Image 1 (cartoon, helix red, strand yellow):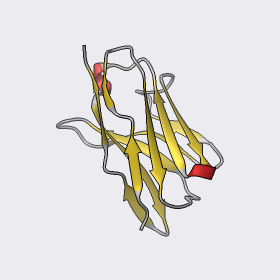
Image 2 (cartoon, rainbow, N blue to C red):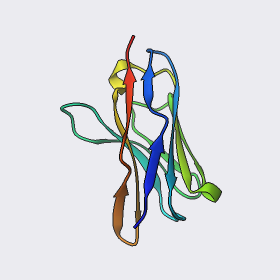
Image 3 (cartoon, rainbow, N blue to C red):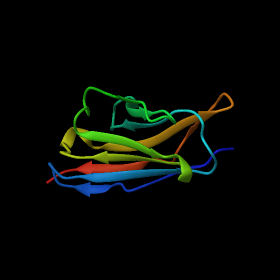
Image 4 (tube, rainbow, N blue to C red):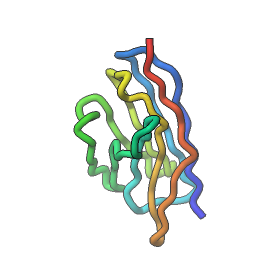
Length: 113
C-alpha cells in the first residue's frame, strides 16, 4: 500500500507562486503526476513526470508550472508560477504501482486577491 502525502497548498494572490510537494512511502519506478479538481468540475491532469524526468503538461499550465522529481527521496514537486484564479482547486498527487493507482489526500490551492 503506497502512501502519498502532499503539502504546500494555501492562499496566494493572482500572479503569485506556490510549490507543492508529494512524498511517497516507497520507491516509485513509474510516472508520478499532479491532478486538480475545482468545485463542480471533473478532476483533470496538470502534469506528469517519469522516473527519467520526461514531462507532460496540460495546455492550461504549460509555461507557468514545472514538475520535478527527486527519486532519492521518492518525492515529486510542482512549482506553480503566475497563478491565476482559474488555478484554484484541490491538487492531488497520483501514481501507480503493481497495477494499482494511488492518490494523495489532496491539498487546497486558492488564488484570490
